[in-house]
Length: 436
Image 1: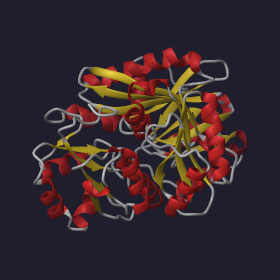
Image 2: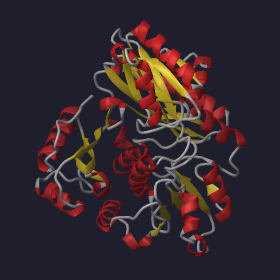
Image 3: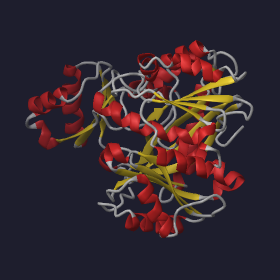
């Protein structure tokens, strides 16, 4: 298998970044969908000659030239099909809206073994694969019905809590709520008991709908809930957890393969305001908890394997002030670090497990992608094939959010931090890098 185990060399991939889907969202939300569509460009790193990428947005030429150069492929050797959507439309629907199915079928006529590589396993991916006559990576043959079911259930906070309880996986204390009345009662109870609460929609991502509640908020609970209700719509319900002041936020990136689950990597996430903004690998300050995190992740992976699921997932949590590992959720799909793990393994092969890397996203210099890359090259820190260290620009969302998205790789944690600081100076980050 290639890189992160995503494909066999003889298979033609149709890369299908269905970031807007019913697995992670109760319903499409324009602002969130636009953010997800911008993120979808990162799946271009998986492409090989002969593959096809179907995008819900435009592929910036400078970024694709850069990716192709690092991956040492000709840009024109990959078919890029763009189906720009408004953030409310699933990718398969966008393909129909742009009347692109004929072109896709024509491109695929020259391939005998085609696999769809989706961001998430959902009903739209299954239907699209059937329409184009392709299998779904990494499944051999048909996708078992249980795979879609378990992906749908465990991509909710309440679904995860139910399974984690059954598997004796430690969690932050919480309450599942199905109505606004239950939500208000749970928030008041949890805040009164624990001093603070975290409210999370059961099905959401990128921190949408996540909010923190303190005792001060209890004084105007009706107004607080009314404002929260106006800004969110989550018919699947919520989870109210005790707010734990985690000393570190940790993650296990996993892959379920035909012979069972394996650990891709363990890391510490950067989550300012409770929203994922980057990651360091391997675990540093929380490394003593690595064996327990790995054991828990493998336990969940065994459950997924028995349910028929194959592919990437992660399990997230944190270290409490009294030193306990508490999990909070899992994501049964590609995650914010799946592609970074793939990039590291592709470029460093057997040495990948010994590398220290930092995945980050920061606002900075208001120039285009090519100009920013030139500055990194001039500073001597831009990674090129054969280098032992440097920075890779892993996505181009500058037109959407003016954010530089990067992956620093080095032989040691200290050196990775030094290079990241050099990136911050070169691209003139507007805020201090959040290393927690």
